[in-house]
Length: 193
Image 1 (spheres, rainbow, N blue to C red):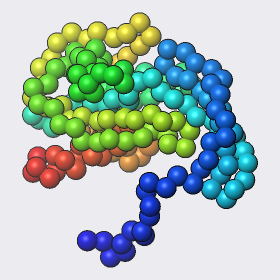
Image 2: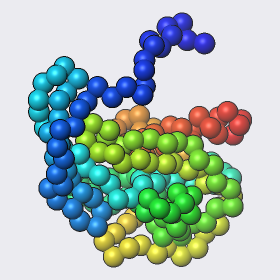
Image 3: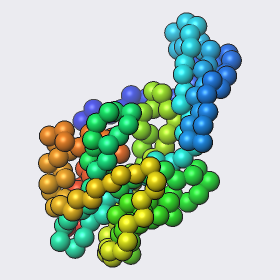
């Protein structure tokens, strides 16, 4: 039990009031809306919200020797190269586990006999409603990689401990990857692995 208990909060009370809402842009992956709001202090303003049409999915594959796989690719919005866990999007109406299994196979060629959901997260909750899920994938079998047309991927097999060091020294900066790798390390340590 925490020495400092959390303050009492009514988690069902929304202090924001939406006056109007208008979609300003949409494509097959996102929509952007602008709301006119009254903020918690009573001030009038605008709030931009990016609504995602997919769930964010991340997978931390770990083999019997404690190795994992990272996927490297150039990220257009950042204008920089990024090492990440295998990840992608799954349509909101599809089962997240099935979508995660597809993403792992497409990006790495791996399939896993054992899947554990280790995280539910929101990727940037001040501007988007995107919900993400991270899975630990174990008992791995290698197959063929099936990247999408927009992906120019590089695979890197390395010890999970090295991937954790990359998180800690900011060589891995993607939020889903950081959360996934750190949670995978904790889950495996709790099992004594």
